[in-house]
Amino acid sequence: MDINDARAVVTVLALVCFIGITLWAFSSRARKGFDEAALLPFSEDDLPAPEGARQTKEGNKNG
Image (cartoon, rainbow, N blue to C red):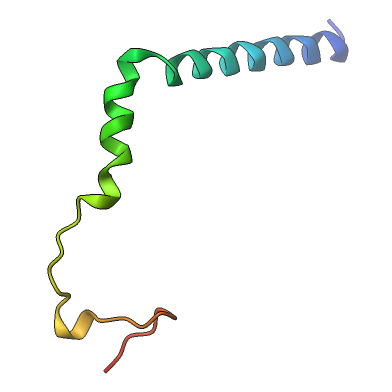
């Protein structure tokens, strides 16, 4: 087995992994979890931050 055979095996394994991940991502079983994850940014509470934890746009703490 020379280096070209090893490269061919790695290429085929990568293709199989890619196809597997693609099928999993578009499967109907995974859709529920993806739909829940898509709504996570909107699930935060709209409570004001504690006085010492306020940040400016640059990320530096005030105060």
